[in-house]
Image 1 (cartoon, rainbow, N blue to C red):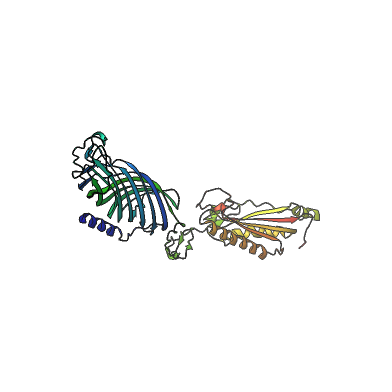
Image 2: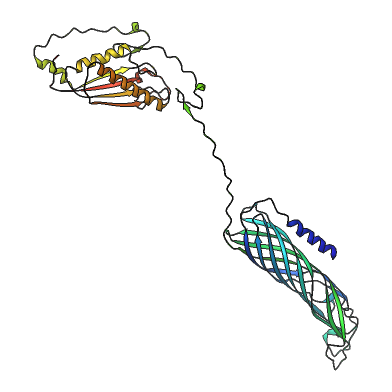
Length: 443
């Protein structure tokens, strides 16, 4: 018995070592379980002799505990087991039953790696009180008027009875499975092995004579020891934890320092402009008289020179130019440039010389770019091209203040090439000079 007690104490001490695992639930809880149990096989020695085999009967348990939030919990536990053990050594004219009541301190470890299901193991140590009721007599067939015969379960007397209680140190091992219904309520099912050890009882014995039986009660005191007392219990119920679940700890994470980013000529983002891909050298382009871009002016188509019209004799002939409405022309640019070539300047000069003969309502200037480079870069490039054309128009003597400019970037391609394509006809600035019909300005 001493070895069993030392083993139970050692198991409980080991389970009390703090765990490194982390759980989010902590706080006080109450538990209630009911189920089925049976006492272990016991041997009676002394004035009551024999063995008994327990039969299954009801069991109930109540507990008050505390969850520490690190997988461990500890609880005070009270359990009661009822059991009819039947005949002693299967002898006729004998009967026995026992009720075991325990008070334990349990240490329990929960496994929290299975979602809502939480298996657990535990051990407890405390006290157990065993209430024994046992009778044996020597009357055949249970007839007290028959002559008594020898009864080996009660060798000293022909009738004996034990109806007493005894308390002993006890320990138990627990294995269970919980199902977390919500943050506070858990369905709890568990198995227990209970070890009480030895229980000592006193009783009364007498030799009764037929046909007039004296009452059993006082002639002799008896003593017996129940060895191997314990039980097996299987119970289910609910466990309720008070309060809300503890919040999960949030580990502070320092935000990484974002490096300063720069945009290369081709739209790539880098932390160092020196790492940009080298910008390819674009050949110098020239604009022919008809707007075609070429690297060699000698390849331009011959320009047909129309004869100059005769000098107008009436002002209405001059007004026909002004009455034409809008004067449209396009200025083309080299790749990634906003400077005007000589041919482009000639186009602007030709258009403004005509426009200055009439009254000007307004001027619309739209800058464009091809699809090479990033979209944001191309918007800025087309804006610079529109500004350069405006400056050239004003340099040629147009003084109107009603000029509307816009930068389209690559959003209004003349030829739809897709992204990343250098197309000369898309590198342009479109100009619309709106004339006032019926006006003519003499020089």
